[in-house]
Length: 78
Image (cartoon, rainbow, N blue to C red; front, side):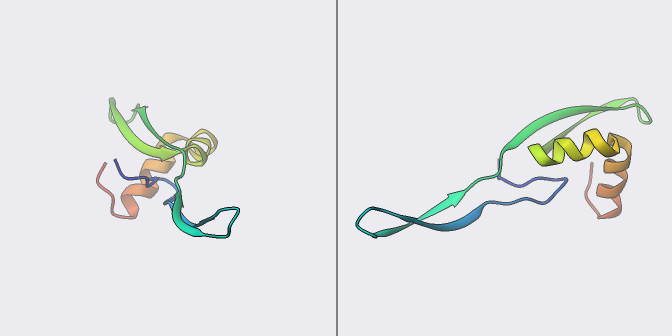
């Protein structure tokens, strides 16, 4: 499962870890990705989305119907 939110588009951030001796090594900051199942009343079915916690808050604020309509307008298959 890739660390990519379907709603907000959040992806991992990349950078360096710096040790006490200032030796730098690569690292990544993954977003908090969850697999959530939502019920779509208009289609009488459940959908599973890969969303970040900010994406979950967006769905709570706007509603699942509005978010699914936006995703479909952007060309995602749901």
